[in-house]
Amino acid sequence: MDAYRLFGPLLRLLPPETAHHLTVRALAHGFGPRGAAPDDPVLATRVFGLNFPNPVGLAAGFDKEAEAYRAMLDLGFGFVEVGSITPRPQPGNPPPRVFRLPEDRAVINRLGFNSGGHAAAAARLVAHRPGAGVVGINLGKNRDSADAAADYARGATVFAGLADYLVVNVSSPNTPGLRALQGPAELTEVLSRVTAAMDKATTGHSPPLLLKIAPDLADRDLEDIAAVVGGQAVDGVIVSNTTVARPPELKGRHRQEAGGLSGRPLFAPSTRVLSKMYRLTAGSVPLVGVGGIASGADAYAKIRAGAALIQLYTALIYQGPALVARIKSGLAARLKADGYRHVADAVGADHR
Ligand SMILES: Cc1cc2nc3c(=O)[nH]c(=O)nc-3n(C[C@H](O)[C@H](O)[C@H](O)COP(=O)(O)O)c2cc1C
View 1 (cartoon, rainbow, N blue to C red):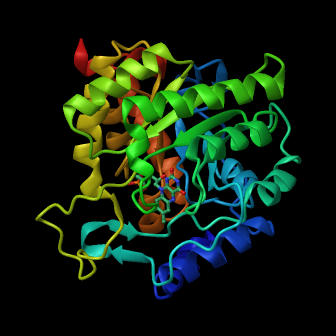
View 2 (tube, protein in one colour):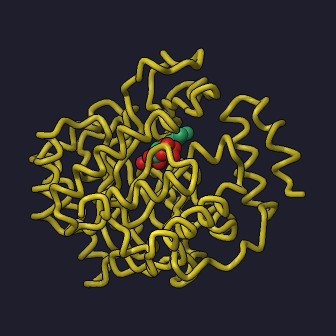
């Protein structure tokens, strides 16, 4: 019997941040599940020049400090995104700042980039070797920083040589002013300074650069972002972060807490934005679909809507580690039933 079946229900009795902290500590000390079965070849894929054994990734926010990425790759994730990491250490918002909405299979968080800072994460990531699984680094900015672009550029300098890919996260709802960086002028400035910093740090062998966007953007904003992405050296777009919207059907008693909502209620809105971004970029930029994925069917729907890769976090809180194998087998079965030999062939299928 896997340990989660024993400890999972106990973890859910603890405050969410305490449960998370204990989980990451246990994983960091080698108490994670081991021996994931080899992936079905139908799931193997190559995206922005990287090889993935399967397209199911762990979203940013679980392993903010680069402590548990090895254990999460061993669990069977096809890739892990560490972060968000801010340049200097900062505490984030005062607790309580993570809330479960079990009736909605959702979470609201207003962590506000609690981070140990670049240096601490970088010291742990030097152990990561190329070819030992895909590890992306998600970059944030310090709350009190006056020059956001400089924070992201510093992240690019520190992590360009350590990460398999980098993410500019301008979509978390809990840092004042952050999402305004999604505007065309601000975004162009951030991305061009990050690209320049990466080029300088790596003498030409820069890792792929991804942008992570919010689900709460109007069509006009999405058009602007697609135009900036087309004109800059952006290799992929992650759609999406958490939402500040509160769908009227939410039942959880914490539904009015401030912060970003993730999990099942985010599935439909984030998939709509994913679909729009796929149409706007005409399939020319790989997209990462994230938001409310809790089953193989959800993963397949994101892929058909335009995602070359997918990520999840909140469903893991409710379903535990066995979810990863369940999603992969459900996805593989659906791909085969529809006659696909490679997951890449199904990307954007709903648009054809
Ligand atoms: C507790 C928590 C912390 C998060 N922290 C981050 C973060 O630091 N950076 C980031 O880009 N996204 C962060 N996210 C957002 C997730 O990466 C993901 O985009 C979002 O939760 C939607 O996926 P899900 O519905 O599968 O959870 C966080 C989400 C949660 C629930």
